[in-house]
Length: 321
Figure (cartoon, helix red, strand yellow):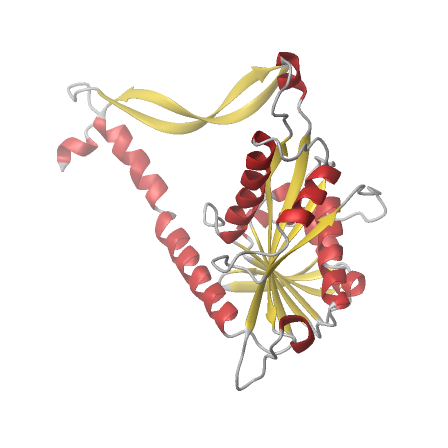
């Protein structure tokens, strides 16, 4: 309608709200934060804004739907010698006591929790059944890493990937190809250092093929979030009932080992694997170049050390990092 595009002086003013990044000052420093801002404008300005943001929405929604469909298809038809990892950091667990003094509220320690969903083929000696080409059986496992280290960076995620790889080796899982799925967090999975470190995956972890897929923005929520929330909720309940005291990552790990290793029958996983990461070494031995337009990358494939194949649908190209 013509009235919706009217920006003239005669057009009525309307009130509406939109999200914008604003600079706010906290503790003596300035940082950008996404906030809901009230606007009073002509109708045309609001609808012009809607038209601009809707230009990219169809492609965004298509990629999200297509990716979810492919992810589901891969899970249900996992090829022989392939394995899927879904990585995600849960929100840190804030330690508390059932009875505590008031001042302790402001100095609570936090525990980092990293969750990995593992989808693999069943192994007779471990799972009591054998997956074959004719009769495929997919096992789902939840792999938790607890750590006092609150720096969620590429060094942390590298150590997590190493722990998961060691677990597969410990159960003699014959895997040649890994499909990782993560969100698009720059510091954890998608920065130049993350992608550069990823290019060494064959050498570091010993698999023949290594892929990393990035969920579309705001479409990375799933079972991994529920898994992390479940562990924290069970810990809260136990603390409130006075059954346990959790003050450190070691306490959280021991509580989970004793109470959460074996899921009940209604759980979405076969078992929970728990690990404690006491310390993450951070060195600067590997240096990498910026990856052009890395925010739009949907998938990367490890080619060789320092070289990855990047897919920005529908284009694929090889770059040196």
